[in-house]
Image (tube, rainbow, N blue to C red; front, top):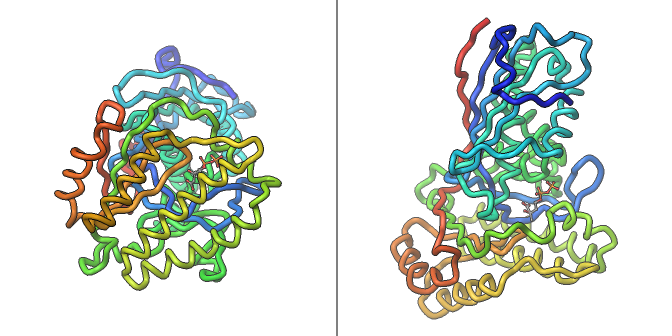
Length: 381
Ligand code: DP6
């Protein structure tokens, strides 16, 4: 792998071939991917919703570089990553380099160009929202679009482009494959969805996207607010967490209920039952953290304020009948789920009962379920 910086590679011998800009959202899992097998395949069917205010924007340019020998087997990249403040960050993560090397197996043309990649997140990395999902999703979609430009005979449909991108994004980070799909993004085989166009271990599939437009369905109104409890780097990475499921005492006790949670969640959407939906989502989040507490060695990613907020949500629901639910990622932050029609009450609840537990009193409101998008910047053959 050859890594250059934008600034010192402008030597006049290069020519921009294609340029694409892609925006891909982060997602929040409702049924969690926890534990993997083989080439980053999930142990259980899982699903998520995209978050429209937390996204990565990635620009990729292909530069036909006269200095690059065609036989050169290394991927040549110019890479820049900007954080949400627009500041340039350090060199590319080894995981990203490994991802690109792997992508080259499917896209041999990557040997013949310098890939100029510039990427930025609009949300703080430290907010604890998985930025790897949006980052790998954006990069994978950009590469697939380049593949299609260079090999138009592939004649992919719009759906195929996203499916190929989802497959590729998965190799970077499992949950990234879901960020490419709108509606309920489902990843992993499930008996309820037994035909290959309904569920797959290889890529995520969109379900219920039509419900986003259905004013009678709760999906149309479903909102998320990320309550930022802790901005410290996680003490245990997701990769270590996935590994901790190997030989976990409760592995069998995870896989069966996880598939059941999936079934019940799916049915709650079919029957437009927001309350059942919320209850399953909470149960699933608590199961995830219980698995961490019972791992060997045990660990805990919740913070005292996470527990305080969970209890206040339960209290608000039982005493004031506000139908709000939460989910948790592998971290301390709380994702509150609510319906748009309750927004004024939810804002009041956060300001009066929750804000004191949040870092710098921060929270991020998101609509859920939308797809990534892209645009060609220039064609300069
Ligand atoms: C708890 O997708 O971050 O957020 O495949 O190793 O990159 P890798 O893991 P990652 O795991 C996400 C775990 C989770 C649950 C979920 O998003 O489904």
